[in-house]
Amino acid sequence: MEKLQNFIDGKFTSPKNGGYFDNYEPGTGKVYSLIPDSDSEDVELAVKAAEKAFPIWSSMSLEERSKILVKISEGIEKRMDEFVAAESRDNGKPLHLAAQVDIPRSVSNFHFFATAILHFASESHYMEGTGINYTTRKPIGLVGCISPWNLPLYLFSWKIAPALAAGNCVLAKPSEITPYTAFLLGKIAQEAGLPDGVLNIIHGTGPKAGDAIVRHPKIKAISFTGGTQTGAYISQATAPMFKKLSLELGGKNANIIFADCDFDDMLSTTIRSSFSNQGQICLCGSRIFIERAIYTKFRDAFVAKIIKTKVSFPTDPEAKLGAIVSESHLQKILSYIELAKEEGGTILAGGNRVKLSAPYDEGYYLEPTIIEGLDYACRTNQEEIFGPVVTITPFDSEEEVLMMANSTEYGLAATLWTSDLKRAHRLADKLQTGIVWVNDWLVRDLRTPFGGVKSSGVGREGGWEALRFFTEAKNIFIKY
Ligand code: NAD
View 1 (cartoon, rainbow, N blue to C red):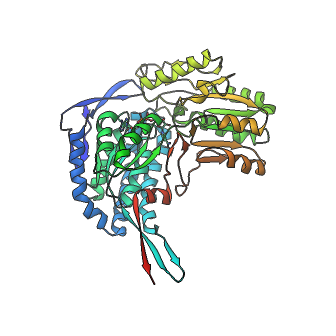
View 2: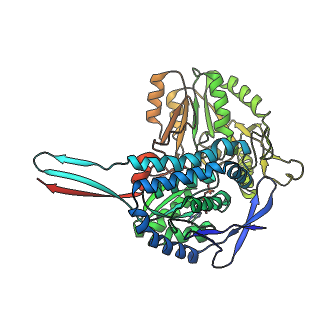
């Protein structure tokens, strides 16, 4: 059985305590590799390596740093097929999704920040007759990057790339549920000539390896993407140390559909925004609100398409949905479907586990599920399910739909379908989210601020926001 290894000080190493745990393949439900059960001892080694590397990396010219990061981007691109197959196997997502989204985006993340850093500038503020302020932006030092399982390398690299580009040394922990492509990234970093200790990849559980990163006093900033509860824990643990925090947390996004939308465009995009990656994208629109005039038309067309959707093993080119990431996550989603029934919901499509034939008969498959008849304030409509489950609810007015959309504790993203430009502006302005898409979904320009409000997080990633997060500003005033 293959044993993954940590990547510390430029070398692949076993965890100090010698412990490993199982890595399951969601498509078959079988263990296929072993993950280092790292702890604070491994984190301590990585901190020492990073401290040694920081003066070298942070004083390198921007051009040199940029060239190495471009090589990492190219290194992933050259091994595209290997990364795509590994991501799909480790996560359960359809192979074609990893090929179209996850790995190309990881390539772009490194390339984008490798080149962005060459254009990053700090500010100066001129005070007439008095003097001038200029602001410097220096790397923070050692930073921690902790990521979830739903878009494994995509989100891992979205943090690591700007942290490195800004001149920091990184201690990174991928999700213990999907560690494989992060393991492969270590090899790419070696081949690209990244100096030893600049990027350290530590595998293990949140409470052990993650906690050791979060609590280490020499790690000055934490960029975290994951669940809201974990984010709250990290906030509490780091507050006394005044660490800089970027928290990208859960969501319960509204997809608001007005009768004047382009129906066909809306329907095909809504199928994607509901069920892509088995609904396990923090941006998926899990609460669909439809203007009453087209409620029945939408419901019938949506259900007709979804009951024909193919759920299959990840390497099946016809698979629209692959496997859910783990047995325990599948059980959590099924428990929410039961809750929806108890709350008076009607299952219009799906709702059941799917049994495929061998060798996939123990895989974690679930039908895409559509539920109607629930109150907007019930638990099913308020809590994050993070699976292929959506609710549909009619509305009669802008005020009503805005109230329902803004009723959750979350505020990550919203989608709005209308051809009335004034209405689009009006509602986009009032939606309590960090991101609004009008007449589309998940269009990403890496320069734009990415993140949520309320319990969906603190801070923004992307573009200059990320480079500002990973640098410390100092203002210097000089008198005339
Ligand atoms: P999670 O919070 O369980 O785990 C995320 C990461 O944190 C993992 O690497 C885990 O090992 C680590 N972790 C767990 N406990 C920790 C601790 N005590 N200290 C330090 N690290 C710890 O989340 P998950 O189940 O992996 O991911 C799903 C969640 O992520 C969903 O809520 C989803 O909405 C959210 N998410 C948000 C975004 C966004 O951009 N806002 C993107 C993707 C996923």
